Length: 117
Image (cartoon, rainbow, N blue to C red; front, side, top):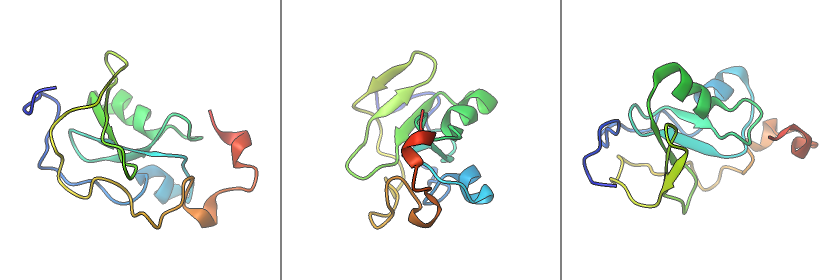
């Protein structure tokens, strides 16, 4: 991926440390993804609510980046392809390292494995 890509705005910070919609509904997630166009943080497709994919469906913003510590890959929803290189997005590049996966800890059900996709 080149440093300047239509559909990526590297200057936009992430919307917060957790999935926007899960936080509002007091839900939980498995992993987090960050929209590379607007900074929306949503939960991954393994999560019960799959908000990152729903954000793409609603907005057409094509790229997400992992919002997990130690991961910096991008995903293109249009082609279902992962890219290991891309522009550096505005920090932070991941959720707080103290945040559990899945998380947040106090909202994850004990049988969480039965709820993932």
